[in-house]
Image (cartoon, rainbow over the protein chains, first blue to last red):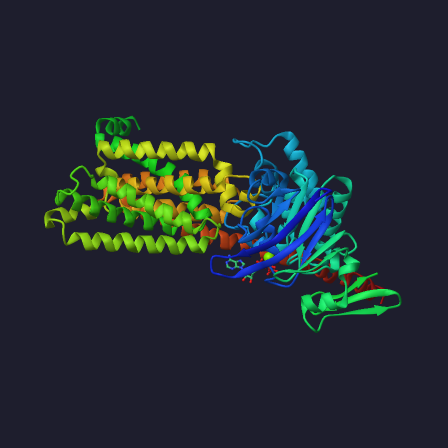
Length: 267
Length: 313
Ligand SMILES: Nc1ncnc2c1ncn2[C@@H]1O[C@H](COP(=O)(O)OP(=O)(O)OP(=O)(O)O)[C@@H](O)[C@H]1O
Ligand SMILES: [Mg+2]
């Protein structure tokens, strides 16, 4: 590790209490700063990797770290640096929170009690909502939004916060093309304008492959890691998504065809 | 008006009942609201029945001279904390359904223990076990009031100090933990203080009133209101009104004030559902009208040229 790494793992294995080995022999390194995607089919251990890096799960073997900090030993330091949005189904909708409360949470959760929102916090929250075109929903109850709108608010929660790393687990799940573009553009702009690295989990590289710098392909272990074009190798894609996935070359462009993500252009 | 005031001041029963009303309302608006937010309304009855098991254990230990110092109330509190701990442990990952199951299991365990121990408790003592489930607003004694006020104030302070933390833990346990919040500590703090308050409230005013007042107003307010603070205030108001109405009615007709208050509180939920339904219908009507208006206007404006046409003829 000569240069600073955004995320790195050495021979990482993670097992759930029920005996399920979600990750094994995971070794890779992605440099800092980066806009990084973790891709793989359902159940490939994407969320597991992210949660282990945040210290929410303990490695069975090996280690994983962010910015050179070990997920177990430096857990509290890591948690101060990261803004995290879990997969959407982890958000409880029975709590009558307003959109503004959710977005402000991204900032207040890192403040000491009593966590009162300052004008500064509110301005940051409003600006974050504007970036995902949700500013007019400020006073609306969060549980009453549509799934895609909720996802945009959660992305705003991450944008409003502070810390050099954004980790988003499936921020594009259940969103239509418009919302996807909005979220992807907002993340891209935010990444280029701020000194912030983004790690996002997705099972579809399609909407983001022009933005991301590094891609980690997971299928319970590392299938491939590198720039989007490098990992778009026919062998790798088939290994990841099964024998029906293929890469088609057409007039100088490479297209990756999978049942999961449809046609995906890489050139 | 002054008559009523004097009557209350002169009657220690009424005075204690009034303090009890306020304290129960505080318990409802704090732990009641948060338990409903977390989908844990069942914990109210789980804790109350676990407390029964604890009281039985206390009576057994006293009657059998194994531990004469072990007060049944102490047993009740220990067992309700036990339910909170088991529930909290199951819910450390933030999944509501798991906590619900844990409540059910620890409830069954404590209740079985209570029934088991009843065989070994002198028969004359057995009714006092059930006494832990049947209190009444007008039968509060000074000890009830002191204990109830103590926990209600504890709960109020916790809710004021850690309001945001409790909300964050309820809405997104995983995200809060991952961003440095000591979510587990707040999670347990919330469940344990709630359990203590439920156990003491049950002893004081009876299980039925506690279920009704802790669950129904919070569920009702949560249907209609869009903010945490709004829900908590509304719960307090509904709880105070239904209990006062319960006492007032019980003074004129022969009935248990707790039972009447319980019925009124439960009704608040039914009414809220009805209001919500009506509101949604109005909403749909408005949407439909907006959708149809262009077409409607087209129809309304359509005859105009036709009209002028016939006029030309
Ligand atoms: N809490 C859990 N207990 C037991 N096994 C689990 C748990 N969570 C995940 N697993 C298992 O670990 C494996 C990896 O799961 P993970 O959630 O990391 O996948 P993922 O790549 O994020 O999938 P998705 O695209 O569906 O979100 C799966 O086989 C899953 O069954
Ligand atoms: Mg996942």
